[in-house]
Image (tube, rainbow over all chains, first blue to last red; front, side, top):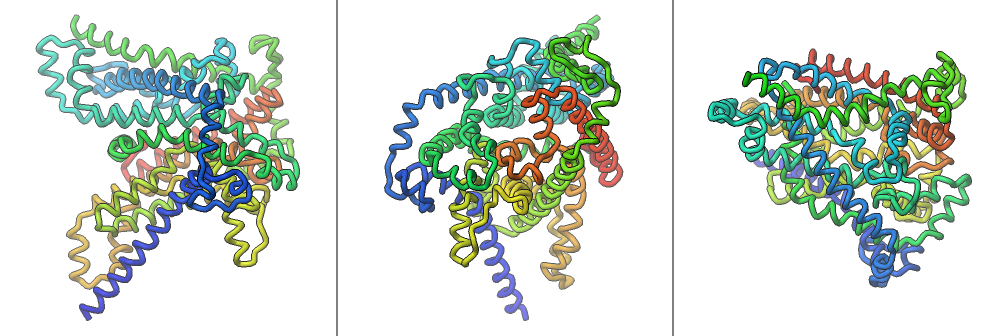
Length: 293
Length: 296
């Protein structure tokens, strides 16, 4: 009886492992397929015979990509956007999360600010009014259109605020008695012990800026100003103009698959570089920030 | 005196954020009046003609209208339902794994798609599901005629829901996994002493422990029910499948920014914002009552 049970338990363990392995492969293989296509020769890619290993290995696509000046211009715009945008985001997150983490007795207007924040998070004027505002500020075709409208990432502010709330009050009290100003308390006491939370929100901001393609479409009129994701989106754009099934079928033979695959792979590299750091932090970040008792 | 200084510095810390919120969130909210006007860009908001609820009446008279709301709801509910089920099941499976390195590697890989943009994923998906792509090649081995997944109104919604679940199930499982590790192990010991099978333990210990998190996450998702995922649909759809995949946001974008019917698009957008707002606030209240946890 007992032995029988362990065998059954073992069988179910094996089944669970197999299911998980299949699901994991399901996430990994599409990316490997892209990687293989980018290193394959053009005709093999067009004939769709590339699996998870390159067919006719070569680096032509990457050599071509090096000469594609628009790709690198867009790449740089994205890098610039990530650096400036994340910097602004993080400064604002830290500055606002601190006063908002105070109790009502210590910061009298706190609740009013909180209501404004939550209202802005839940309700928006919608795509058209925001677009017109950016347009009226003469920010179209400038990098600021990609950065300033999203300057206050409210969700991340709340995440940071919840982390600050967990810091013992006694630390702040003793510093205040020694004559520290609120800004000094924030920078010298709160920040150094909040590094994991700070890392989490920073990484969320980086990913958000890097992955956003739609503000590029909205606010940039000329392709020279497109950030990278918008540029890549435009590679698929023919699909949005097709009107017949025949066109959709033919589309794939026209596009340069290996080059596009190389572009996709290169666009993922920055994310893959920060992903290991991210993974260390986002789990804590998610758990601590999303729930409030 | 000192207390006043402290309050002042708190206000100063809030100031930059408030300036940005006023310019980019609050001022645009006043732009909503366009929904009640026949807005003409040359005349501006102040001089455009007021038309009351005409834009809304026009919207409801459009043949597309019912279709768009229907598409939005079907796609969003499908994503929430299947996404939650997949995340919970995956968390339950992963929770059974005791081998540390295996668990870690699995987590590293399944969380990854969530961090890739829809632009990148769409390129990959369009390729894999194309008429001569790998999926159709596999189906061909079983003698099934190639299916035009991306151009077929029968398939497209399932494609949207399926790929969304694929992107998010790993990342979505994090919160459930956290809830699972919080379960007192002595409960399981007691249950197995009493002779409860693994399945019974799952039903009577594990699942009830997940219910509060499931309710909370579903409440959180309800606020997004009218979003249905603009980025994903925009990067994957084409005119052949507008009928089954045109949602509020994609419609607002095409009507508003491509066809420049600002007032109509703002009206549709406003309706969406108001309904979403009501939904998320009531979801929050509900979650507070049911689980004692709030979203905000």
